[in-house]
Image (tube, rainbow, N blue to C red):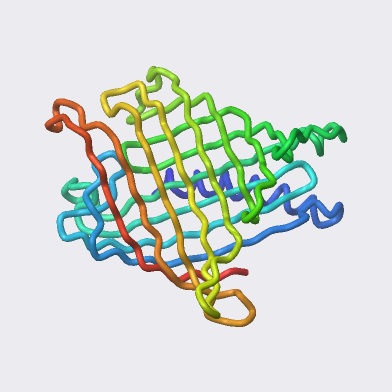
Length: 264
């Protein structure tokens, strides 16, 4: 818990410092904050991420922040998962993971137009990840591209040099890590507007788990006219290679999750 609070304070301090200066200087151009609660009745055991269990019953709380600002954009995510023996590990009844991902726009920093075709901007990006499961920590340094693509409200791709640390093992080889995130325009089914967004990750691991693929699509419907409350489904799909000591072979973990989310 001490490590968790320290990590939260570190990330929160960065957000508070930037947003405090921003008030006077119109730092924030757009922002959204959201808290969410989720429940899964069929969460597969995931020994790599420490999620899911034999019963499949898992709960999750999430806080998420996203902003576009005068220097680029920020994303912060805290997810706390609860359940019995998560990841098949006895006594592992709750885990947390933190993502902090500031990116700095070359066009905003230099005043030059760096767009090229559908690429609207190029950003210098840093992605930090922290979890209490396996004392995991990752630092990612790279480039983020934003795109103007018809049918999408936001579309970005990231390419990183990644260094990870499990259980204090800081000598792990670096690897390449890439990510796609998008939010599409609303999908209309009759009079119902479905909000769809997704994250797709390819992690070229250099350990016994091989290449790792993560896909997380969301499908939500707003519950009020103010569009501050929505509910829907999130699907977490995680594919990796089992090392020999876990029996070998490919592993695909699937977790459907019903969620409700409030924006402020």
